[in-house]
Image (cartoon, rainbow, N blue to C red; front, top):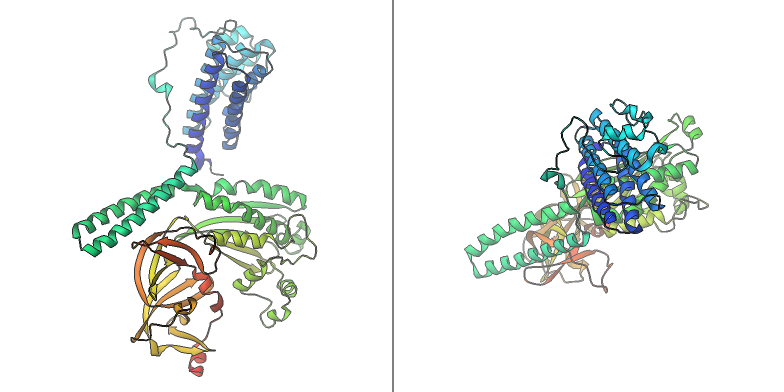
Length: 584
């Protein structure tokens, strides 16, 4: 882990904890009870854990010393009066300097010297001669290593603290301690915590602003007001800027979730008697918090499958000429308006013969060198109840996990694909939108109604002479330089009559998804604009082919079509030029 990526987050979290330690200490001074001590102990423990994760050993040692003091307060051995509070606040000041030092330049002689000061003060005032000695590791390279054998009086003199009275005092021959500067009472923070609900509300309000601007644009066009149109263009840029900032504020580094799976891999691989390590790539890629949290369970299912089904036992890997330790890669990357999460293992891959056998299609692999297409493999493996296992195990084999992962991905407007090479491993690709609320869409007309398609699935728009269409196997297609593209008649999907019979040309939206390419014939292509995705009413929620709805400038509702559904039945159209010529 590269700790530099998390320094700013650590500094802000530590600043909050230090503030809480100060406030709690003053509350104890004022006579607060056990609940405040418990809270202080929790803050000190959190700081110790955070610092340990960052590799800041001196902060861990100092936090642990504070924990010891608070533990004695819990048991009633210590009581925090004003004098003890003064000393604890002094320790917090030292801790603040230590944290500032390690964040800026890592562990140093100055940091270790400050650690010696912290432990010296605590020993002299809260532990006495029976307290735990300062270890040479804690103060190595500092002037305070001699404190481990010093008596409390000597320690208090070095620390500048009266061991019996608990009061800060000036050392002989030195100037009195200077008062704290104004800046010492406040640490600037580069970030703040905001409730996710507030960000959701802000995103909803931006969505309403976009709808309002679209309606005003329609009004400006209707009344032909150039001034209003120009102002709407300016406001549109401002709204787009606000939208971008809110979207960015909702993004969470994928590593925040991915790091959790290291423990999962460790525990399950140990139980299965396998040697496996998890490699995380792209941990800094931002994902919408809602999307990331929704993906936790699917990722758990997929990683379990890799551990149980994919990675071989050490003896099997040795026999196959592989390293005994298997590797699962959890990889996140950006592609256009999507984020790709890939779970890749270097295991034995999918047994295509067993898959075909379990699916009841043993003939499907004849003449194919025992391989399925990515689409076929994904369709079979994600089917409800499908498993290559005869008997379900603890972590897989019930035929539930892959299907649950597929449903979760598609519920977010994403897609799942699976690729596997026998003896080499398996890769599962999850294609997810960066955000859920506002998308760019292409509006088109079918009959008298307006509909929308997500722009990222649109390869191009074009027009084709109607008499240039060909027919293959009863299906219409048209030819491009890249190959043959099947035709989808939009009015047929809506059970409407064809009202495009007049005119020489057909208007076509060329769609491209992981399932292939297709041309959607429409009445009219209206143009591109930002649309706000609205949830569907209960009566039509889950309807195939419709992924959402949006409000147009006219106030009417337009359905957002799902291109993957449109191409689902047309993924097999792959004809060469000779086939087209021979049938036409």
